[in-house]
Structures are given as structure tokens and as C-alpha cells.
Length: 211
Image (cartoon, rainbow, N blue to C red; front, side, top):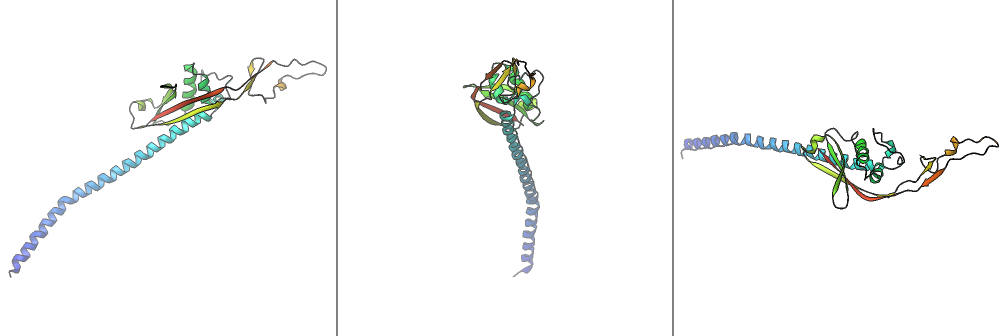
């Protein structure tokens, strides 16, 4: 047996294996790098998508809980509605586009993140009607994704009293403190009017947040 030929043959196989490894190794590294990069990007997108949904959900819940009397917006008159929530106020002002827009945008603009835009709407029974928009308006047309949250409002608004034409907070207010009576003098009490609560809704609201 010619051992020299065997050794030569083995060397040739070893050389070919080494060459294959050198060619395949960069491909393996490229594939692994691509998978790591894709995984990181996917994770970031999932986290951003989840955060945007939280923003949408919290925003619509905020509108359903915040009293309109706590919203300070130039040009917005909330007299007689201070105990209404923002969404109850919007329902009462559906025929007043300016008031409902100021209420929505004045409440949401300070809390929506700078990298997101939003559109707030209500359903009139057949279509979604815009009530306001704000945030980063560029995102409304150039966005990676959008999420939405829905809220249905139904209930009875708080009653309130008026005295001499002025609306006060509610039936329990100690209004007589402003009308002291001297001894032996008949007090001239103010004229009062009790205004019962109004049925609110049911109405469906939706916010779409773009990021």
C-alpha cells in the first residue's frame, strides 16, 4: 500500500474543508447579525405599539373622568356645566363645533406625547365624526402604525341650582351665607331654580393615536 498517496489525499480533503468553512463563516455571521437586528427592531416596535395603545386608552378614560370645570382653555365657556365630565360636556355641545373642539383639544393636547398625533371622534349611528385633532399633526399622514381605543358614555349628569340667574355647584351649597339677615328685618332670599340632571348618551367615542 502506498502510504504517501493516502497522506496526499487526506491533505487535499482537509484543504477543501478549510476553504468551505472560510466561505460559509461570513454567511453564518451575516445571518446571525440580521436575526439579532430584526429581533431588536421587532421588540422596539412591540414596545412602542403597546405604549401607544396605553396612551390611547388612558386619554379616552381621562376625558370620561375629568370635569370640564377643571379645563382652562381660552374661548371655552363652561358655565352651567362645571360638574360635567369632558365627554358629557361634548355630548351637550354636539351642535356647537367650536365648544366641543376646544374641550377635546384643550384636554388632550397637554397629555399626548410629542411623537404622536391623535384624532378624536364620535359615532353618530352610521359614521365616525371628528371632534378634534392634535399632538404631532405630521404623524397623521406619516406614521408607522396607529392604534385606537373606544369609550361608551351613558348616564345621568349631576343636577345643579341657579340663584338669581347664577349657576352654583349643586343643591348642597351653602348659598345663604351671601344673604345675611339683620334682627327684625325680613330677608329677601334669592330666586332659586333646580335643574335636574340630563340623560347622557349612550354615545360611542373613539380616539386614534398615530406614532
